[in-house]
Image (tube, rainbow, N blue to C red; front, side):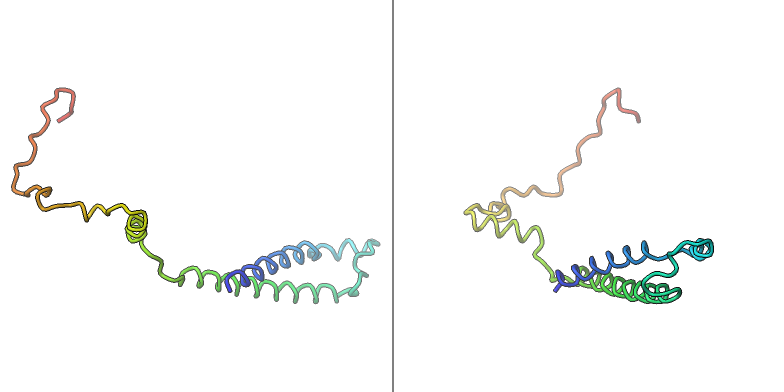
Length: 126
């Protein structure tokens, strides 16, 4: 589904680019007044601007809709496994034990030990 929306999105983007490049600017009518034959093209004098304006608006609407759809699909993707779960699964499939299995109560140090003394080095600013 996401690939189909992506293909439509790219085609709409290419359509917008092509139609914008083909359209005449507002100053193109002035050039037609001095003998340029561009105004009497395939769609007539005003037909091309109406057709291309509408087609551009349609492609822009499709591009906007597919952009929102792709953003929604990306944010509501299925919840994958966490990195920790993936590491644990990889350890169990490769035959290694996970770190929590190798931890024993004798390895845990009590919290009531005094903190380490501050450094007395001369080059450390106080």
